Every structure is written in C-alpha cells, then in structure tokens.
Image (tube, rainbow, N blue to C red; front, top):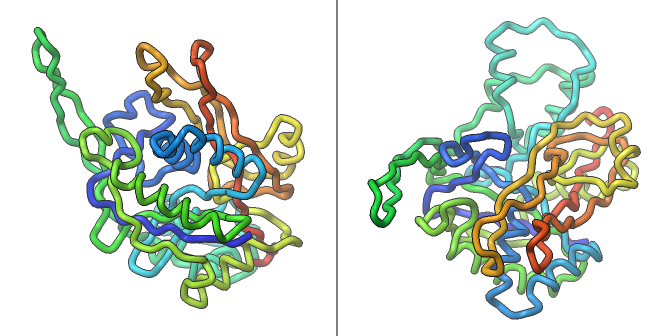
Length: 325
C-alpha cells in the first residue's frame, strides 16, 4: 500500500454535528470521521457518472482504498488522536496537570513516541505543552423563513479554523494510479463543502497539499510509515472510527481499550419523499487500542423504504506500536 496525505484548508466555518447530542445543530465538533468523508465522496461521485459510487464501494471492499478520520494540522505539524491507553506507573501529579491532561485530545507526531513511553516507564510528559489551539467554536443564530408563518430563529454551532490550521486525512491506496481520480474527487468535494449546512456555505475547503506520506519531513514520514506498516506490533491504535464485522467482534474487543461513538444521520437522496434516518450504529472511536486488528466493513444503512443502498464506511487504518513506544 502507498499512503497519501490530503491536507485541507477550510475557506469557511464548518459544522460537524455531535452524533451523541440531542442538539447537534447548535454544537459542532472540530473534526469529522471517515464515514462522513466516504459518504460525502459518494455524493460527489454521483454527479460524475452512474458507476462512481459503485467504484468507490468496490475499491474499499477489495481493500484497495482505505481512509483515516480527519485530524488537525498546524503549520507543518500533523496531529494524531490521543490513544486509549492507561499509564502503567502511578505518579504524583498536581491537580492542574491532571486537568490539563483531560483536555488533551490530539498529540503532535513529533511527541507521539515520547507520549507512549511516558505511559510505561519513560519520563513524565508535561500535558500543558500538548494543549494546542486550532481554531474557535461558536454559535450563530439563523432564521428559517417559512411561507405564511412567522420567521423561526435557530442556533447553529460552527467551528472556524485559525489561519495556519486545518484538517488532514490519510488514504491507503493499493495502486498509485488511484491517486489522481481520488484527488480530483476530493477537490470537487471541497467546492461544495463537507459536513452540515453546506447549502449555507459551511464546510468548503481547498486541498492545501496532497502527496505521498514519504514526501513529508523526515521525522513525520518515518514515524507514520513505520507505524502504518508494522506487522509485528504489540498494539494497534485505530486511526479510523470504525466497526468490526460480527465474526471479528469478540477477537477485536479482547484486551481492547476503546471509546464508543454513535453514528446516525439522514439519507441524502432524491428517491425518498422526505428526510429519512439512516440505521443507527455504534462504532469504536479513533484512538481506540487493540491487541487484535480487524478488517471492518462497509455497511448498508439504508432505511427500509429506500430503493438503493446507503453505505457507511467502517474499514480501519491502524498504527502499530511496541509496548514501550
């Protein structure tokens, strides 16, 4: 496999609704999961030919194409999800350090191995040094204008990235000639936007950089390539919010440390009269750690009355790590 980086710079605020929240419209997460990316690419592919979605589906099912979730970048520094791991040694830490560590969600690649060692027998890491600003969340008020009715105000949560920040995702390709059509699809997606409220201008982006991971600076490229292609790892850290197939579930969860994420949403199709909900599922979040990696699947989550499949991506990318980092 060849691993590619897609670095996105957003030209407008984003709205990525919180899947667990009952008020997802009035809040916004900073990042999006791989299933949202795949669904958005499928929507874009629909406009590029009758076979566009089928080709994407076939590539993923044959494992010629896999995605990570989207993670933040700042300048040239890429960040990865904080792994679900427990410290093996108990240290005396003050309350401010414990409070700061709870806020650490992403670790810069240049500190990732050091962070892993600090959980075993390495020197303690300063959590305050890991806290990074990527942008700012806010809530804006919009108005729904309904014919013959009073204007109805509503709140929309949004996240606006700072000038030197954005999101990136990784794509694993079995053939290098798949890169160009994928790049064109991602670039086209950026014009329309990703996430919620795209009809109001949210979520538009440009591809700041698209390149093989080996073209990154030496430190980041070396870490990623070694970890993404480590066959004899002691643990695997998921870079994708995903779900094992039913026959994989018991083995995958044995000895795993993980967080559960609800995946839901509405079907976007002209073949239904009104908005219909996709089938609800619960995935294992990026950053979850496993002793036994799994293949995952692409699930059909179409409602009963939908005349065509609706795909939800759930195939993981893993980072392999040794016990002592």
